[in-house]
Image 1 (cartoon, rainbow, N blue to C red):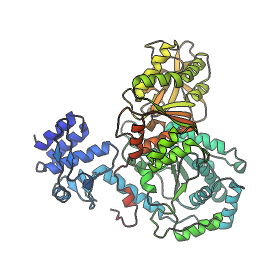
Image 2 (cartoon, one colour):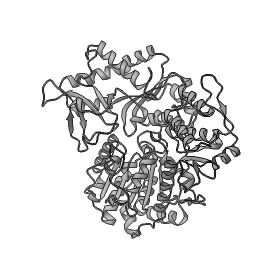
Image 3 (cartoon, rainbow, N blue to C red):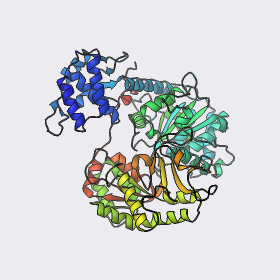
Image 4 (cartoon, rainbow, N blue to C red):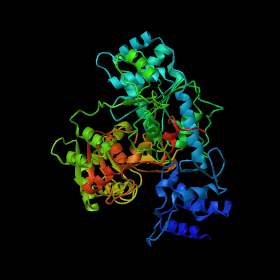
Length: 614
């Protein structure tokens, strides 16, 4: 066996390298027996980075470094950059952009697995083409008057009016902003404008989100917006769906039924929580959206990126803010707002609208100020805000051991769960029980360990058993909250959906799990039919995206972790409506604030004015 493969195998055994990364390096050695160690190393690293969420490997970041040191602490040193690039160019397994090889090397030293290079290149071309489409030709007087009607008096912020005007006239728009900035309400006003001025009907509009939870939340917010006086009489779409269901993606092989040759038929497509959409899914989505369809992407670019590879929303927004001169003048005429033009607009300038004023948090809100400090990476301010006596809506509780965690759960969470289980045992409706769980949610950075989801869920069930609320060892009991972990298209259940176990009124004495439906009703499913699932007194921060909770608890791990980042903290904080409590240590919290979750990608570069597109 190649010496390098031996070392990679040792790294795999020590847990430093995934199985898939090692097997890919081994495949390269068979495809190209002459491949040197530097090629196999690059293949293993780019495969490993992709598993971790990066789209590519920046050779400059690794060149000359000692890598995969393992338990012995030895490892080996990566080649110098120039030498490394030259050896890759000589390999038959490595191609230049546009060639069909296992690995693709960009001129600037970004190395890709072919599939991810192809996805990124296709997405870049698609977005540039959409941004270059002509604006909608509308009577400016009619549009200005319509904007005044749907933003009467002091309703809406300046940024919301600008975003609404952009989304009406531009063929492709991104609306990004933090919690409570009015993203979805702005979308509701855009849909009303498109109905009034363009004649689109509710049935010609499609609403989607990455998860069932996020889709349901989108429907709820739009239903609430329909009650605003200025939107009375507007008919909004009544159905929301997941992106997977919208595209008809097959569970067996991931192939979508909707694609370029069988595209979506809607005239307007709104996609919410776009930060959760990975590179591959975004490519499939845009492949199925015709150029003439108005596309509106909505999300918070500062949240955690998708579980799979890519940080698509953040990459699109980076460097694309501001308006070109002619567009700034037109939006200014429509809104009556004096808008500065950017001197050197990027191709997507004019397609990105930023909402930066939160309506959820007051100016003196601890959660609001804490979120801004976390985004800015201001560790000192974060700690100061959490330790000052007021406000009390954001606090830090010391949690250094499993005993500390058990005490905090018993004191601050068990009374809440006791009420929920009492409701369930008393025959309460599924909606009431689920609302109880949504009023308090424990979030964790990790899945495993005593500070992870599994450890917290185990402790909660032990305490419930000690209190006599559930029978020890009984997997199903009234009030058990359940999260789905894998899509089941036949049942219509999707990863992240949350339900609750209750006695089935149609089968006395039998337990069923009740899940909310898009129309607000609930449906019961026998536990034995469920796809992979788990108890969900606690969930990961990733799984919480698309949800809001009145009170949020964030459990930090007991030691430093590469998973911890300011993006994870910000995402957890932004789930809270009224209060947030962090359980952990000052040191771990400070480390998380100082660490950014940046993913290697070339999408922003492809969307820049100077980037060639293959």
